[in-house]
Length: 629
Ligand code: GDP
Ligand code: MG
Image (cartoon, rainbow, N blue to C red; front, side, top):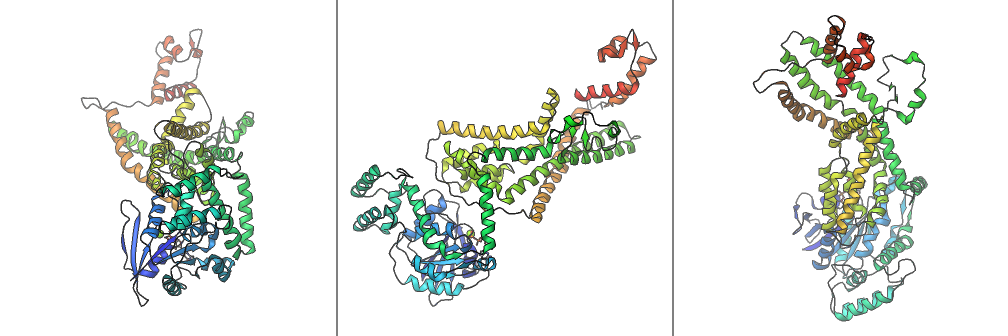
């Protein structure tokens, strides 16, 4: 029986290939000590039984994530008979980065060029023969999903597994090539397996590369002391990474010819990125975009046009659209219009219910209208704005802009000791903290993971939004500030700032490690799929409505009970402020008016001992005062 391993980037199609090869006889378990799935199954179509292991998806053989460590240990220590390196042909450059590292190990390698169906559909062409010659090991074009060429791949792999292979490095011809050769020889003399791979890892300063003999350590130390590159200084790890990419571009990916339209789309993405991820403009643009989203969702003074409205012709006043589309302070944003719409419907329903229950005992209508309906409707009134904001965030995600934000923020976070990788879970925190925290599992080291989990709650999630909006409303009312959107936006920004400050504090006090490098993929910009957006929105809506009718309904009923009954179970009538105002006003008119009380409410209502205010004005003022209270 032979052992083959499938290695490749995340999402290159490893599991698809694995399933196609092994059918249903897979054993799924975990790699020892970590919660990374391990799959092992058999391929039976050759004369000899082949056991196949699906290694975790990785971008590099660096020592930074459990997945990377598992994969490199497995290839070096368990010595599979052949490594099938799956390469996503639609993304050659990034995928071949891992390949250049696998090639350095003394193990037979076959390259499975996957997703060839997509390449063909796009009209791109790859010169497989030329690529094979450059890489120096067999390359088989397959489509794991369509099942194309899979048996051929296995035959080639089987043949290859019979011929031992020596490691080869794309760095051999580079500036540090001779040095790599020197250390490789030393390792070889000492009987280290895969000497070239270990030599390069050791030179990179890889921290899980065991210390080697004093002789080798001495040579490497000495070399590093004298090494100074004009671009990378003494950072050998960066120099090596750069060397790999240069080689890939010059020798490998040049064998792919892109269809013209493809290039156009790529150029467009590139041009947009020049602006959006610009060193200086990137963050201000992000803040402006974020502000616009909040403005469109919460503002009652859209684009600050309210000033223009001050002298608007009075013929608009009092139309049914006033309030819905605009108020004295300006035009309503989309979010506010939708909210007003929902509120006017729920108000109407409450009114109907109250009328219908007018002959019922006070506590019955109190319970149904003020308890049940008021609670549920209060939650529903937030739904339009939450959905709208969520829609905006989904659009940012689907267009590929969120990935750019992680990239932009990496530059800042790096200074404080976190990588941009940590920012992806944090951004997920805007949606919901729980999956965001679960997602930190992908982070490189324990410290970074803990730091990230600690600050995720500062990224306000959807569930916190109603509370933030309510607080923002209170602040605006208290200080007479008209722009709720600015307050809500500021709360988000303060949250992000707090997260950053927290990380700095942690880094200065309890955690002092080195920040791992960050490699991420910037997807091309594309239009979001309306269908996918709708599915997201529908899920979110369902969640809210369910909550409104369960937990929130139950709690409002409890609160209503606590508010409406004395300790001796006596119902306290809730008095309608309008009725009360009427009553007070009648008192003023008929019986001897108590001037002092009227003056207390508003001194302008009394002139020379006479009441000088009409009923509607008084009722309106009174109600406003009550509301404010
Ligand atoms: P893994 O992360 O490497 O295990 O990748 P998966 O096997 O989960 O595949 C990722 C995605 O790529 C899935 O949606 C697959 O259906 C898709 N996929 C895999 N192989 C192919 C292929 O040959 N052609 C196309 N079009 N899609 C593929
Ligand atoms: Mg997989």
